[in-house]
Image (cartoon, rainbow, N blue to C red; front, side, top):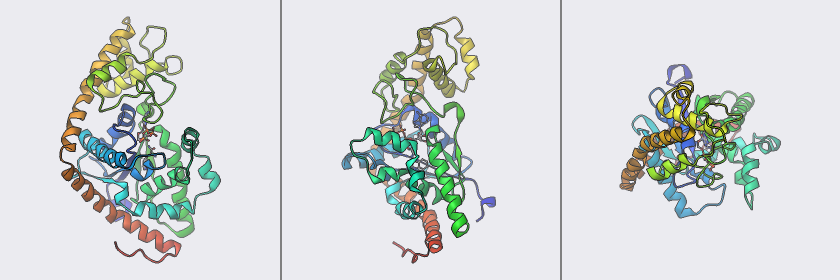
Length: 338
Ligand code: ATP
Ligand code: LTN
């Protein structure tokens, strides 16, 4: 099949590095994942290989991969309409990564800002953390991907992926589709609730700065009510001088579909207290069902693992074709079927 006669191919991944996803993951990426399964041929991957680039505990990792998959299903991913799988069940990912690593310049990889940030926080930095973006490029290129729904922090990795695809195609003949990032600008970076100049993050936000999808409604309300705002009182969108309030306005707008200007005028003359109180209820009410449904999926791990195994089989049928092509191009013996 050519690119012209198939639905756009979408692929994205998320790391199982915490017990719960957060509001930034949801608004920046996961909401788009769910929406795109309607119009695209979508592949979504719990990237556990990426998760061992920082310190991890084996039992917790396997459990977190399951909890991650359960949350994705609870958010609305439908295994009949998209392909959901765990990266470690598809060995083609590290197979292609090796080839792409041999196309990546050392200087090029050294410029990745996520590597610089993450390695600065580690006592011991590994080669795996350094080559993390090459594995990400393999994740994407294996599926002949057209679009990659992610948050803004992934833009640089997407650029590298495109460069590698173009370089490989130039050297060996057309092998990979060159993917485009799919980034929704309004919610591209949800900020930390206590330090609104930083992005909300599971690894670097403090417990009050990061709103987890599996928090209890009370925890969610508390976090929103105690979110840092400025010393003024006007509910106005101005990310430069009012970063905290602007972040809350972004969240409100994304969850209701109401334009920011309309929310500003609704709260004109009212203080931050009213606005935060309403947003606290809105967030808690919108997210509460996710925890309940996640628990239901986790109550039957055999069924959950079956869904994932089926997803991995489907993913492998696509990924193995790309690997076979790339192996041939670089002059390897063909992989024997496993
Ligand atoms: P970590 O802190 O462990 O790096 P993370 O919280 O940044 O994790 P990831 O698993 O790396 O989350 O990201 C999953 C998806 O969520 C990616 O597409 C990423 O761009 C997006 N994302 C993460 N944080 C935010 C945020 N604060 N705002 C918008 N999108 C985000
Ligand atoms: N690096 C991403 C996670 C990730 C990913 C991918 C995203 C791994 N492989 C492929 C999109 C496509 C992150 O840190 N959020």
